[in-house]
Length: 74
Image 1: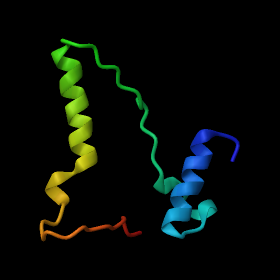
Image 2 (image 1 turned 90 degrees about the vertical axis):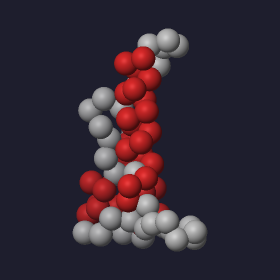
Image 3 (image 1 turned 120 degrees about the vertical axis):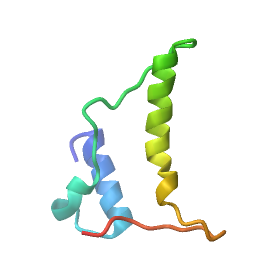
């Protein structure tokens, strides 16, 4: 890999035990990957919370008291 993004894609595919050439698109980089938070800026705080909520995806978690690990299936 010639970039940090390439290293991340390679590592993700390695963790999933899939071919990096075929499945590198499983690692996604958003168009706006950086979010600056200024103290007292409510709009920025809301954006940060929305991103954190998406990452946590609480609504998709199984609540059986056990740890659950998984990945998307293609």
